[in-house]
Length: 110
Length: 116
Image (cartoon, rainbow over all chains, first blue to last red; front, side):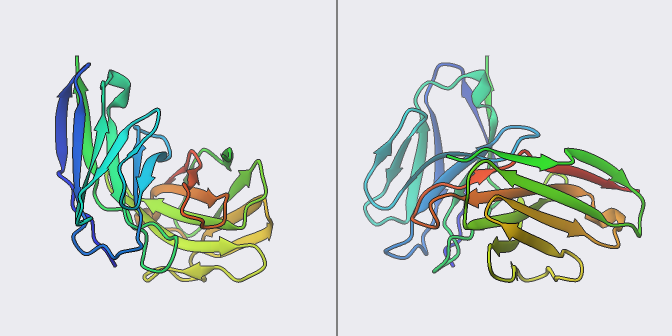
């Protein structure tokens, strides 16, 4: 199964872009990368997912490297409400089961 | 999308007792998952509960400890049996409304369980 590695924590100034990296070097060709976040005491919230092309939605952008071994989640204008733990997930091989890593604790600073 | 509610939202229980957690979805879904989140930790998948079949458990989780029911496409229960303080966690359910077509899962708000 593809294992994901993320930095434990990051800080970002309010209004600036937050760039959260994820390493998934053992990902296979047909496995998607999903990003979720968990704000304190809530269930995880879906942000975005992708296979090989860069993706953008109203919440964020996802940049996947050409070799697909890493990706970056970009929150273009971070606000205090974006303070959360961000999880990069590659489902268990051949299934839709999520294996959560430790995630990145993002703190947006005023 | 899917809106999920869980009951109870929190509970404090005595060791040796059991608690049943309910997960209700506002639409019919095939795939439902149960997770545990121990204090300060990430989420760990307990089992997959698909309607019409037995739940499948992940390594380290057994049916005797965490029996699951899935009577219909909008509802599931997870029971935490013979509880000990180590079972103190947040228990969450999630659903995959589109049945695994590489789309997002939706998570409930969680049930915060404290075992004394």
